[in-house]
Image (cartoon, rainbow, N blue to C red; front, top):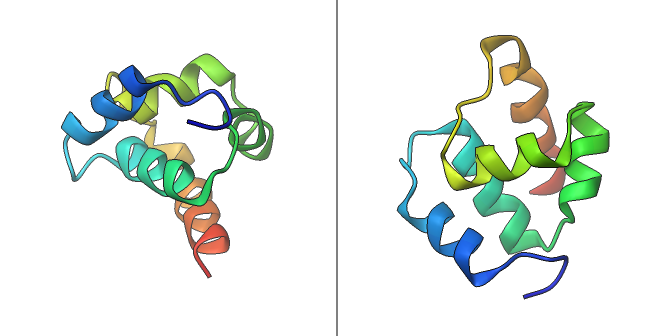
Length: 77
């Protein structure tokens, strides 16, 4: 795995709720090989928060939804 995506995190992401926006973000970033540090900087949050979202442990707050959706759209064009 590149960019520090452990097998454990990838497996947690695969098991996470498909409807979770954080898990969706994780799937995109893992597939597109986008480092957690880039996501954290872009969304102005900590890397730990990104990991928690990717793993489906925590759902992003509603006030971050539009920025996350815009980021997903930007990287999947």
